[in-house]
Image 1 (cartoon, rainbow, N blue to C red):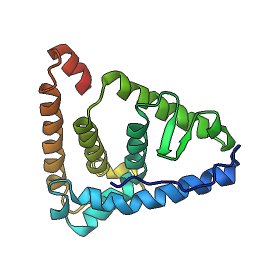
Image 2 (image 1 turned 90 degrees about the vertical axis):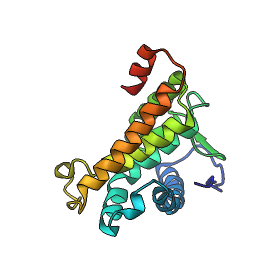
Image 3 (image 1 turned 60 degrees about the vertical axis):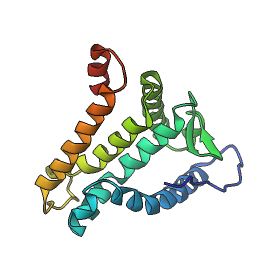
Image 4 (image 1 turned 90 degrees about the horizontal axis):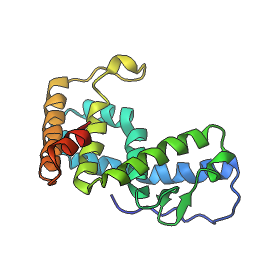
Length: 182
């Protein structure tokens, strides 16, 4: 998706309201592009509109979070929400519970950095998050039953196979490949 800018006045320190307004505005911009991205996943547009909507509705936050994590990989200790907007964990403290979320995101970003995650792997993981959101409808009170779970599983299997293939072609020793797949 295209790079999104916050275009926010960088008044610091942030308040709970200003932080949430900035993040909500950015999320709105990214959600528009998420639909176009999902349609590029092989097989996604062949699903019923109902299934497409259900998958997007159930995974949008996780898809946004993995994008945030990916943008932040090269910036230890920072979350890069946009090229013109980066926060460290302390700046998240103005919103109750945000430091814990920031810590989880920063830990995952650090792990991606340690693994030297490649763009192809990231793209596969992002697609897996979208498609996997429909795997356990009983865990969500808001998710309706999918029309074609078998087709979604086939698409998910193909993407998982692609991820395994990308890892196999990485040149890493088999033990490191196995660790990476975990």
